[in-house]
Image (cartoon, rainbow, N blue to C red; front, side, top):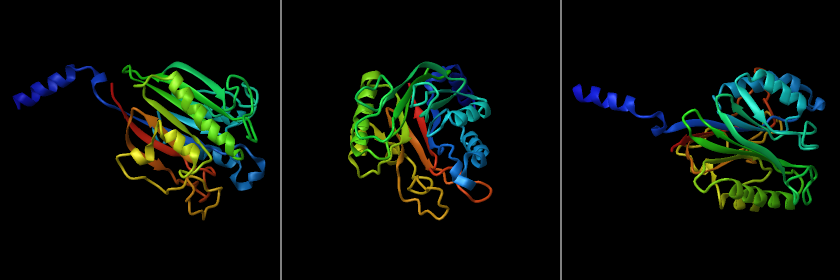
Amino acid sequence: MRFNRLYLSVLLLLPLSLFAQEINVASYNIRFNNPHDNENWWGHRKEATVDLLKANDLISFGVQEAVLNQMKYLDSNLENYSYVGVGRDDGKTGGEYSAIFYRKDLKLITSGTFWLSPTPDKVSKGWDAALPRVCTYAQFEMEDGNRFWHFNTHFDHVGVEARAESAELIVDKIKEMTGKRDAVILTGDFNVTPDTDPYANIVKYMDDDLEKSKGKLIGPIGTFSGFDVNSKLERRIDYIFSRNLEVLSYSHLDDKRDNGLWVSDHLPVVATFRLKD
């Protein structure tokens, strides 16, 4: 027992930064506030959305399709979180956000947004895209000094060239902005399946965390339901990718509202990572 007490004493004297840190990160297309969605309108889903996000102990999460009134609701009701991001239509509050919410105990080191286009530093629509598209990014520092980057995006639903070019642009930006050993997470609705070129270009540089996870996928393989309660959930278009992180688990959360309807037309994707010095 004396050895055990000594061992425990030594452990207690070690700095916390020597121990691995586990964090939960998510990607969630919350579906924009469309009054024509009837029983799936945001007003009927917003409380369940907040409950679902709170239940998963997330350190940060990326949202897609959130418009200003949805951002305000999330910001008001997720008391332990702040966010970074801008509306894609004007770089301020207009149009959909691809925002990153993060726990308030994190220190924000840097953040910004770029457009998925040949002119990423200004409001713009790229290639054959139907709509302006953006990527929001941030670097955070945890209380123990560990840092990680989070990039969040939403690829165009129409433009084939735009999706291919967007994948290359984001990888180039990550290479440009982050260090080779930095922990980096990329979340989003990519509007592509794993058998496409944009996906292939991303996984040349980053890990598909479903494939890298130490555990089996929790939930169905697909992430898009279109609000169809009978969907087979076979189409996977929402992802979490990473670099320099250990992936402990990966989930597609198929929770429904009390009335049996979906919380959104996409499933939230959640990954648990282990961070080390």
